[in-house]
Image (tube, rainbow, N blue to C red; front, side):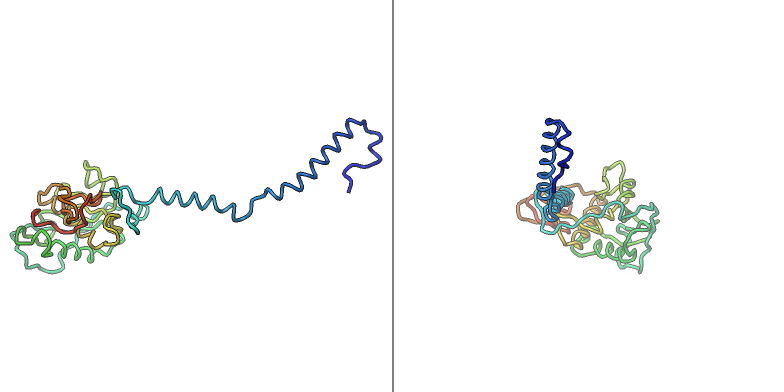
Length: 256
């Protein structure tokens, strides 16, 4: 099919006709070549997948592993997933304990609105603090659960936002837990998801959280890794790295 009418060429100057023929040739080549340059569906998806992979690696929780990257590191919930109400609800003891009432009493409270079952949290705290492997081992300390008005210290589960407020002026940055003003503040984000250092051992990590912060309530300071391959002291900041030690949830004999 001709792109230029034969009858019109005789009336058009030669130089104009040459331009028209050149333009027609260009259009024919473009029509043939452009479809070949169009991307296929699979080629279009690959760069997007690569971008998603890199974004996932950049947001993975690996900043506190001291170079160690566990095979399946638990993800820490963001602030959007744990709402802050700021309302602390005391959990009274479920039964009278047989512990020495002259020892240190601890009360338990939970911030309202957290995705935890309060009574179950209370039992977990109590069982950890009264466990024979903990601070009460060998009779070094005597602990018992009591009401808030009679407690030497409180154990509080709080959202990251409330944790930051209760721990101030300490900087917990929505991530860490603390002991401040007679209150052990456990960050709910850590309680629910654990730490990359402890991997999937959530129960063990919770025991470590409790024993570490209660250790501060008992006047204990931070410790470092004493030797390669051994258990880390419970007063070591294990969430920030273990060095050459192994995860450990209970106070070592030399710590008590």
